[in-house]
Image 1 (tube, rainbow, N blue to C red):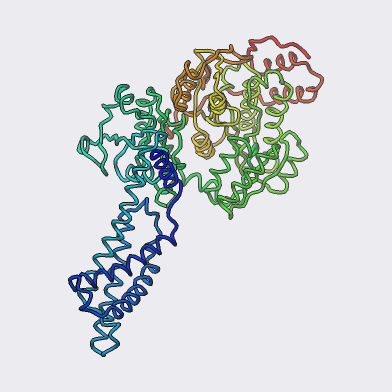
Image 2 (image 1 turned 30 degrees about the vertical axis):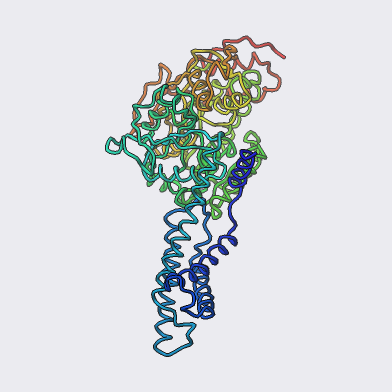
Length: 633
């Protein structure tokens, strides 16, 4: 019965805090009764030696003065269970200010012979100030101790290690201790600074990373590992995550230091580390001056503006002083959400969302005629390999037809630059999607070599972007959330990976390099096994691959390669001044020949069979080989 009662008390205390009005009343009562106690102490407990009625009236005067300063400094406003040095400072400031004021009142009453109520002995005021300060401090400490006792009694808390014992680590530690839900229990700090290893910070042991063994993790029953270092280097962060991921702990990351300093200190700010952190990429350095000069006062058109790449290009562009941003996409809902996001982020940004299909030449010409864009980022395209493999008509119509329409309008309306987003699947293509992208590359490259054209045509080529719509990371995360299995086409399949912001930053950089005609290829780092991606994502979720989440191999899909390439054998790589951007030197092609073939396919597209479309594309792209037999529908 006692245990049950104790449990109920602890539960109530954990889930509820003392209201401010109650703290205010307790503090006020402490002020009043401490003054009477100070009187009794001053007269050695001989109550008959002083006038009780005067003492009571003086107690009310003191109460009024203290209440005024309590309200001014709000010493009652903090949550007692989270009492900090700042709260103690408020109590001391409140009481000291009241003491000074009352001493001044007493001095003035003696000098000008005011009523005896205002003539309070200095010794009583000093005893009272000390007594009430100690009482209020002890009251808060006892509540905090009881709360910590209640928290420690919980068996639901997860044991935590914090990596970093500096300012950020201390903030996270206090956040954990002050969490009313009591989700975590700190076991210690991990730090690479040998000077503080073995010592205690804020009452907790600081360990080196050498102690992070399976035995240590199991013995300490560590379930969560929190990275709490401000501006940690990407390579270092990757190293730390890789050292912990094998133990099955949940690995959390802290937001930027600015977020914490702005007062948004909540446990929900702690987020799971992302797969991107395992890439260990250094931040990209951009020539911001050149980009700013190229964008200043310009009207920019982004096709596919609501897609993964197009929307991120828009987010990057709003940092610069453009005249107007025109975002065209046929997807209504994503366009709506992008518009709301841009309005909320930068209300003064001048942008226009237009719902439209890039293959409708008359509609697109109205847009060009009305807004006269000087720079065009062409990101509109169908990108999913398996879907495009069974829909070659649509792949050609949108990817090739859309590029032809927008590029010709860019020339007609004298756009300064046309930047096309291509794909690594355009290199030695084995699928419909890659073949259409290669044809787009050829078209754009040949357009740049035509005489009398002022528009500079740029192509940017890169691989898979993490987190894009329908990409492997969101798919794997959903499969893990559903309990598995995680499906992989082949155990040896590899891919290049890059984050969306990285890719779009390099698109902007490449857009203002060179004189047109270049195909810029981005450094994607080393190729990564998709199997490793799946295993790491499962472990980052605190689960064990093959045990908690099964991995299932489903075989290569139509048109899918085991590995991707960024350059083909006949495309020598030329470095640029940017270490992450190279140029693929492609041989010149005959524009008229390519253009005639494209027009021919577009005119008769609806009447052509799937096999005929692929055969026509193979004529334009000799290296294109379809590995899967298509059945005409």
